[in-house]
Image 1 (cartoon, helix red, strand yellow):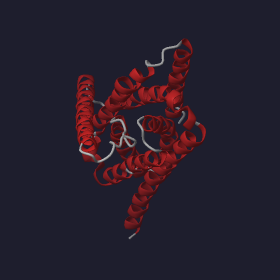
Image 2: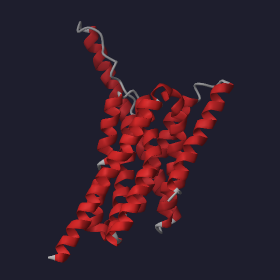
Image 3: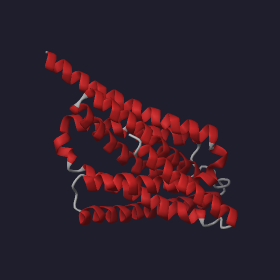
Amino acid sequence: MCGLRGVGVVLSSILLATLLGGILSVAAAAILSHALLASWVPRMVSFAVGALLSAAFLDLLPEAMESGIDAHTLFATVLVGLLGFFLLEKFALWRHSHGDESQAGAAHAGHGHAHHAGRVKPTGMMIIAGDSLHNLVDGVVIAAAFLSDVTVGWAVAIAVIAHEIPQEVGDFMVLLDAGYAKSRALLLNMLASLASVVGGVIGYFALGAVEGAIPYIQALAAASLIYIAVADLVPELHRRFSARDALSQIVLIGLGISVVFFAGHGH
């Protein structure tokens, strides 16, 4: 009976920590993004570039390598991920262009004008996919910590929340820049945060079985962040090339890198 009670405490702690962790990190990022940075969205794309690249190269990939995965396998997985996200974006753009043709045909047939106001870039769903993978891994990590010791579990959960906030700010900036309304960006980020709960449950019931897959999931999550930063956001930065814009971009990219780095290494 005592053993069952202990099992219940650990599982409920994992569920509470992953759920609260996701909600708190997204809520904190939303407050920063909406209240302080909303009018700065075009400039804060530079911050997002730094945050995404820092999360990929200074967090996810080193952690994957420390898990014991062979370097060749790790980078091959990243390459597969980059190509996969390229194909995903290509498919999204293809669907989008066909949708535009349908709208144009409807307008031509006398149904009024085509409605483009709600149009968004494919980047938005790609950042949610990558964030979900990242959160899934965080959930497994939190579960592993709780299975070791409940106190350690809560400490790791708090560290994960602190680490996630700057990246979530970057994700919000990407979603707002992609054309999503603030409320929809918040909803999508909240849904992506639930992946940590899924990861926590999987980690609790099948940690040994999924542990070997974690480095590959981290590599794919890193690939998504690298692809979005380099293929979608950096070209957008190059559209503004005055000396003042360039200096602002460099400073904000550096700020994004620094914030994610210190949030990840401050525990």
